[in-house]
Amino acid sequence: MALSSTDDLPLCLFIATGGTIAMQVDPSTSAPIPALSGSDLIKAVPAIATIARLEINNLSNVPSVEMGPQRWVQLHQVIEAALARQDIAGVLVSHGTDTLEETAWFLDLTLTSSKPVVLIGAQRNASESDFDGPRNLLSGARVCVEPESSGKGVMAVLNDQINAAREVSKTHTSDVESFNSGDAGFLGRVDGDTVIFYRSSCRRQYLSLGRDSLPRVDIVAMYAGADATSLNAAVQAGARGIVIQALGAGNVNAEVYAAISQAIEADVTVVIATRVPRGRVRPLYGFAGGGSTLKEAGVIFANDLSSQKARILLMLAIQSIRSATELQDIFDQ
Ligand SMILES: NC(=O)C[C@H](N)C(=O)O
Image 1 (cartoon, rainbow, N blue to C red):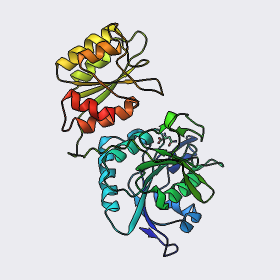
Image 2 (cartoon, rainbow, N blue to C red):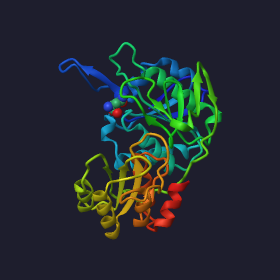
Image 3 (tube, rainbow, N blue to C red):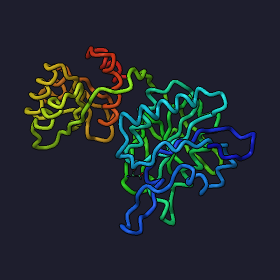
Image 4 (tube, rainbow, N blue to C red):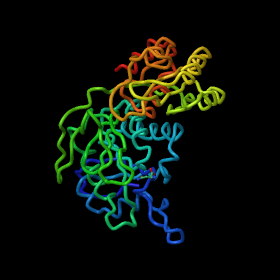
């Protein structure tokens, strides 16, 4: 459905997927649930017609806990087809904030166009008087039509702050100032009606989406006193890859180390990430389970990617690559 506004404005595709931005409080339970379609959202923010002409795709209305490989592939296909059209300047996607960074990273890795793709969401639902959805929608649209957005990859725009897909993460459960890019810093910001970029994203990667179904990759958490039960269960479940959310610079205890060694012998690719929000993992310590011994055992180090982003990179990479050296090269970029 195309919503008309000034004819000479750029045309963007607006894809609604769900999330709190599309939720209202259900009076019978007093809890927010999916309620608004993409069309409802746009109708509630008439000022958007001064920024862009929008074509609306009400793709889904799900909380982002329901996002995953199947929906990512579907979203990828819809966006790839839209960006191939000459008349489309960019794509705006509304999304729940809980897994927004994962969808953004998957799309950033797999889309081929240099046209902007902007993900937005909201921390407060549409029944709240200080609902942040409209502001994020307007700012997202501004970034989507901004000529300087070209080649910046997939971006997350919330609270007027522009983040690159590789670096962005949700850092607060409820505050509207939640999404940031850690050590890398924001890509830019929206100031009133002006989009200001501070930098480009210089660490972008492309991995082709070979098949429609991605290989199973699980995340296993390391913590004080952890045993190998979860890791062994992932191997039993048929995981082709396992990302360990390790400690510190990339360490596990002796029991988990032994299980990792066995998993690698059974041809499961194991990637070490960390639960620490900032910094890289590396082969540092020589005790059983320290990074140096893990490297000896044949693990891949996830660089500074969170475990959830390392999982996505691994899912895409092991479609075609199995050699540890080549996989490590991909994670080192
Ligand atoms: N603020 C939000 O959008 C959170 C919501 N649970 C979601 O991710 O769908």
